[in-house]
Image 1: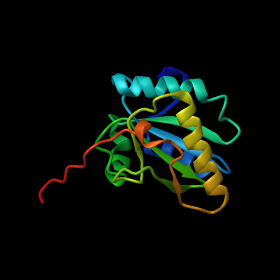
Image 2: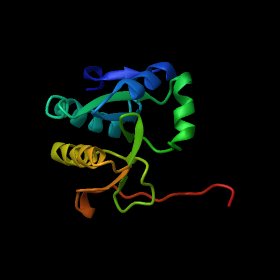
Image 3: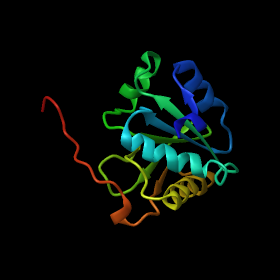
Length: 151
């Protein structure tokens, strides 16, 4: 399903999209088109593009592209798929009860979960908030363990 969504492989393209997306939530999925979990997430994203088009834009970022490596380091993307949200060029964070508020790691369980999250981020951003609470129940939020190297 990734062929239905805009895929970015250059840093300049990602920068331009972040800068130029105004009054909408920008959803950037970092991952690989060949990864199984990324394919599950891409299917959900592709099915919801039309439904969220009034308040969100969706794009994919290829983690294997040479020029996008700067974003992987900056956002500490070690697990894929990782989904990052922006509003008017501001990085939006979400408190989902996991240790990392900067991104969503993994796929959403269903289409409505993704729509609810994007809508919550949009509503919070319109009120001037940079961090919002996750509207999903804890059982539908992917759990993961953070591993710290060299500690």
